[in-house]
Image 1 (cartoon, rainbow, N blue to C red):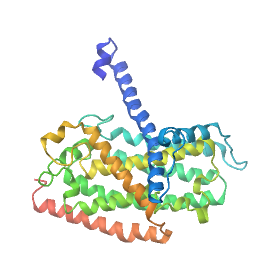
Image 2 (cartoon, rainbow, N blue to C red):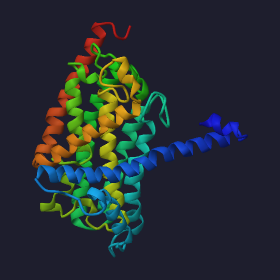
Image 3 (tube, helix red, strand yellow):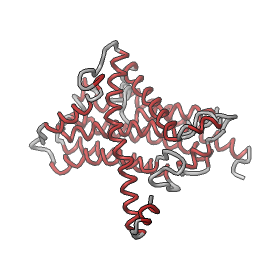
Image 4 (cartoon, rainbow, N blue to C red):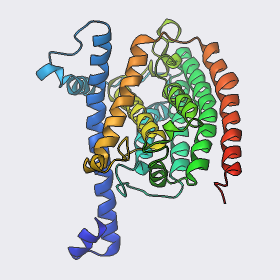
Length: 347
């Protein structure tokens, strides 16, 4: 795209700047539209599993329900508690929403189709996703209310706990792929086991994918790990005092993070933009279509779990993270590195 703008007579700096802005908009606009439609899909899946219809009034088949909800919150009054720290109160949802978008910069949608093809893409995702906890903690503290504050402390402990095991899980992927670049990680999964594209077919990495999927649900506070907004004791969690667009930013950020976790499942373990099998005819389908189908598949799993699995207690949540996932992921780091050393993978 930079060459295109340079062909119009612009300098390299101007062409690079315009191409970067266009790349950001090409990711941000479809992502926002996708978040709106995925909220609709989420509600329809829950309804189907509860033998209800779900949204079916606004627009054909209820497809415009999310946009109607967005218009409703946009027109609502923004209420700021009198005793709240107004500056931090308003900046917290902006942090959460912005961080949720920034991580998409390194997700490869096709071979070479990535906004920032950096060598440390996976580290970038870890760093950016870790910043999300600040939006939650700042919201809980600045609200000057005990329920949001309790929820913020609970959320920070939950997110940090599962980031530890996610880190060790990703070490296994990096060891096998030999790179932190997400595009190269996808390419390393081609014909990984026979004609199967994806690390998930590897007996040593399949358990890591299962743990990553569950940890992703905990990291994004999805059911059965939605302890940050448990209705019985925390009202609505750290979002209790928020209204209007500030509340909507948290809602959008949460679903953008869920889609990000679905994309990471596809990119790190299921071949990303590669077809499921290394068969020439399957490569006729564009890579971004395969990635989209995989993201939708994982989102269905997220929604399915939320509709069917009861909420964990907080002690069960912490026990799973620290006493099961952490030692298991550490064990598999040893097993994977030992296997790769024994087979001369690093030679």
